[in-house]
Image (cartoon, rainbow, N blue to C red):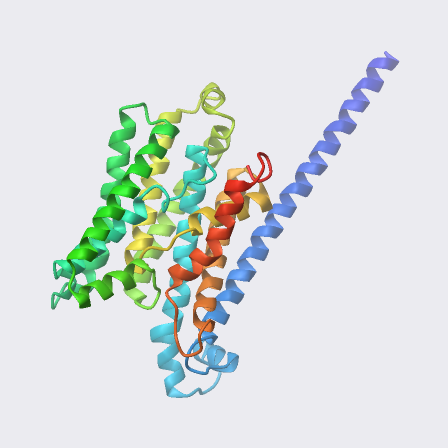
Length: 360
């Protein structure tokens, strides 16, 4: 009787300790998310301030909050140029971070991302095709044809990966191999477009494939915002099943998860959000690889926190890259795809060469 009571008391102490550790871990994850949001907010303001035209924080807050009169040129620069670019950086970064996190989870591969699986290459070919054929120069619809063509071919790549994967029960290995095949194919087709292009069209293709936020407009922001606001809750709704999937296909199936259906559903969401993001800003690599690993180091694999943290990390990284692209050479704006590659390549090599268990 006494022994039983002692054992019961010991169990209660263990349970209380486990509950305390869980609550502590949850608070830490929430703090990381809030800190990431603060970094994004600071990056947004800094991104608006930094640029070829000299603006101060006073000018920025005066224009945004209408607290006092500011020079007319500051109002035009902020509302027409810098604020759309800064917001687009956050939205595209969040979209690519979320897409990369979802891709790495369903494929169980730390190097998977929309960029490495060819979806971005498909968008690049679509944009190049519209430029070479002159669709982008149409008088009325030209400004929409390039992003529309990019979106269409990004979706086409996703559909081809799905059809190839479906023949093998939509396994992660088949998806990865199909994605790599699509990457090489559409990169080759994009090179063909560059070979056939006129000097002027070639310049436009190169500028687009390097990635740039300079063509961000309010209508583009509205489209990307709508897609992110729709897809993010749908992905978050699957967080429990995605966490179970990290235990392995058999264990997830044992917990009642339809693995094949879950992979298909997430792949469709990832394809849509990636296509919407890259169709307006061009090919931006490595955000989909880097930000999920940052999130994983901060909050772990619990998808309830991992997916939001990946989105916040992606937004923060691309915002900081946008600031860097305007400070490398005073008076000029570097294509942001170059900056993200400079950031991402060392991180990519660290993943490739890391010892097993260090990162994944």
